[in-house]
Length: 158
Image (cartoon, one colour):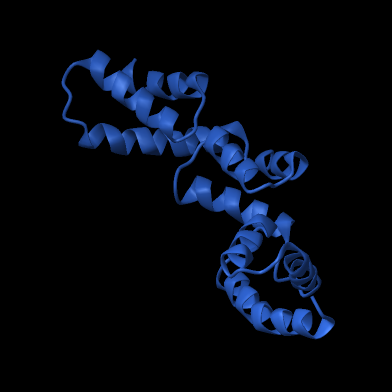
């Protein structure tokens, strides 16, 4: 590929990538997926990623922190689901640990308690055992550990 055609592709794809990143925080992995869908080669993708990093359109630290905070506060996700999703987005283990440690277990318990309380109100199940099982499956699907779920469920059933 000639230098002119490479420069042309960057001029075409860079504004699209900037707009994509300006709309909301993105990881490098998400930007690469977007550029792939646009048919951009991996060499040019890497050059565009470098430019976006220099211009601070992409910042993995910022992305990780905001992702964790929003998934806990808005979606009620537990630690296991958040960690798995961040790993799927190729975020480093160190970064994940750094920002997950910023949310203590008490914060996760508080969020889980609110989730369970609201779920109890909508459940029509009368049998306490079946109700508890449904709540357990619900909380497990949100990414909480069995120990954490049982600790919070005891507050509602004992």
